Image (tube, rainbow, N blue to C red; front, top):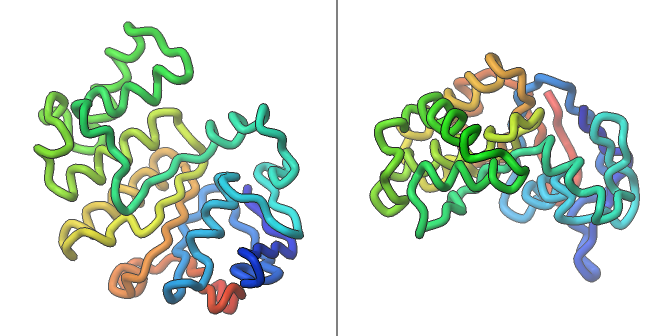
Length: 219
């Protein structure tokens, strides 16, 4: 599903990722851990092709995305959904429209959107909040809305960068269990970058640990 082959990424003279080799298989649930500055976010941005490696190769479904041209980016965008720590919701649009816009971009009709969006909101427990705006939602509700938007295109991979970083422990568990359900019921590969050792220790999943740009553990 995802394979890094000797991937190195630099910013100026600083090596952020140093010859990383790793494979994440279809349907896996993986935690990406490490201290601040270890390279977690950079690794996720490489999967999304928001960055390109300075050397090495990155494969998504056996296609080397490190050499894809801009016109081929939809190949990645349709397969990878992204969930941010700060939600990235459109404040001027209600919950329904925040999800609908992802479907509009790929050309879904109004009739299709009217059918699909309620199902997505229902799947994350937000159907009754469809007309609410982000500022009317709690932190956990905002993150669930962000997840509904991320799964709107039925991606095979969901990448989450510190998705519980701004949430309390109980809400954090709700979000991780929602992602676990998506992993089990939709078969989506889940990659979560997190500092939360409580989540990692209580949900026994594979852990990739970065230290100073090197992958030092992948249990």
